[in-house]
Length: 248
Ligand SMILES: CC(C)(COP(=O)(O)OP(=O)(O)OC[C@H]1O[C@@H](n2cnc3c(N)ncnc32)[C@H](O)[C@@H]1OP(=O)(O)O)[C@@H](O)C(=O)NCCC(=O)NCCS
Image 1: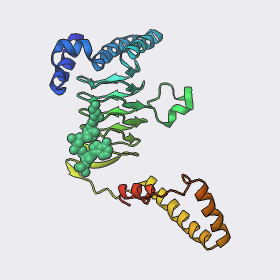
Image 2: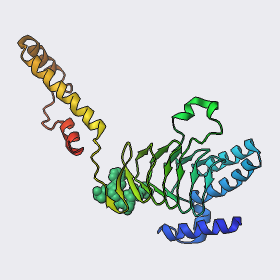
Image 3: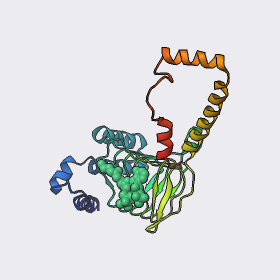
Image 4: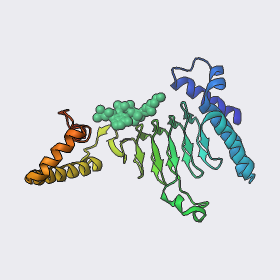
């Protein structure tokens, strides 16, 4: 029953959110709660083929809560959206029971969506298993599966399936824990590697240039004229600081 469904969500929010002081407060002030109520209604309309009305109800929900859930999305029980602003859940997304997501999460379409109407009706959004947690601002894209009890860290971008009981972090997301054990992650940081290579090439070009005395004089002059452009007196090279941070 609808009322049982809502009761469960209110109880779950009370249990998980220390900021929630009363059930009445949840009903009145929790956009995550309002969003699932709107979705319940829009999903009913969607299933009864009143598609535009369904989209309109979903749009009203979005205006009130800042949470966009397509009426075609399938949501499990005790689904909690904390804060909520900026959450986007696409048409063919499936969310299991007891999932918990924070503000700014996207369960979006993968590259198939660029093919437009050809992919209408095709599954192109993610599936979350039961008990999945997705941190704020994380983006999960495409028809992939985040299996039961997996946790996606805030700010991650996940493009591949994630196994059960694991923690995924980073861009692109990679598994750093599985079944409570740290995963030996020897995957290189691609961006940091690329920056390191560029820096090495720049260093070697600068060395070659410095062996050309005339060019060097011109360079020194332009540095003096424009201290922000290479003439900085700051000793700490931000590229080195970045690479150190990436462990390279
Ligand atoms: C992913 C998450 C659910 C895992 O929670 P957890 O199981 O309690 O595990 P931890 O928080 O201890 O994190 C596990 C590891 O992931 C790392 N990690 C967590 N979040 C990360 C992030 N966003 N980016 C990179 N690494 C991250 C931690 O440093 C830790 O690594 P370590 O063991 O090497 O130190 C949690 O870290 C998270 O991101 N929660 C969402 C928080 C959020 O969005 N808050 C918004 C409130 S308004």
